[in-house]
Image (tube, rainbow over all chains, first blue to last red; front, side, top):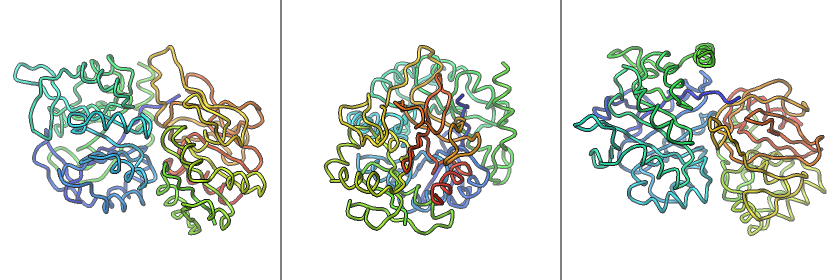
Length: 253
Length: 199
């Protein structure tokens, strides 16, 4: 049977790897191509790469990365046209993540689904709690919490034909304090799409918990680029054996 | 020389990177049917929908040359993902006819159990029925909503379990297809690609 996917989520800014806390204060982590080489050797099963520069798609860096990346690569950031998506696939990117485009040009996303198949289009769903503690969709391009309810929003995306939800908890990003399991439960329970959740992983137990609340996949940020919370850079990833334990402890639940 | 077909739908870059990483610097990305003359093996990658792909193949004039090189000249061909589905006669995904190199069709996954998501996406186990390209139980990366159903059982090369047991690899003489992505399945993919290269 299909196994839950566990993957690094790496952030790119101006060609380098960075890591944020709650979507803010990106700090330098290292060279992207080098990190990919290390993840490759660790037989990482999948990788998400998001460019947060708010500029153009860094095709030059991506070209170097895809040459070294023998695992599925999902790219997001500054995708604006069908040609952008086409160029990314031709480079060897497997899937694209869209976010801002879902607000600015959903028609184009629908067209992309039709052209490339729903399995290759992922929607990034960034969720932040508002002043009253309600879950709302967060729009990073405008740095604002919208009034959109995540469950309804995800249902709309399902109608658009999106193949996968990348659920990012802004509140938990870079905190190491565990994932927002309630959010995962609500979203995974309300859609038939696979949900990859991100934000807050600090231990392998957090991954186990996330899967048991319905995540099809779990993305790890800080934990795979820092040795510990508030400590130095260390590119690492759970070993195959650790992953087997994570998965099997879920099967026994 | 291994020709990787670029008909506007593919993930040609990563297939080429893996073959070159393995030390075989003998790949050529081919954009025109004429170039098939200069290769002795063909890789047919594919990302996207069946009709779009077959539309491109037809309009760009690949149909007849592919038939000539694969069926008449017996050049080994490896279809990957959608590329494997194109080897079949037809698909529920569209109205166009496939290449028809292998008898059978592509069907969409349908599950009552909502835990089984579509597309089938992620790493799954692959069991060899025939050992042409893969000798032992392995793990590969899949992304697909449609699966292949062979008319002749002897064309089934690999099998995978996802709600149902489905055909994750086909083979018939010089024709091979895999539903998963060897170019994205690190060490398992490298093993399989190496076998195809050394056929």
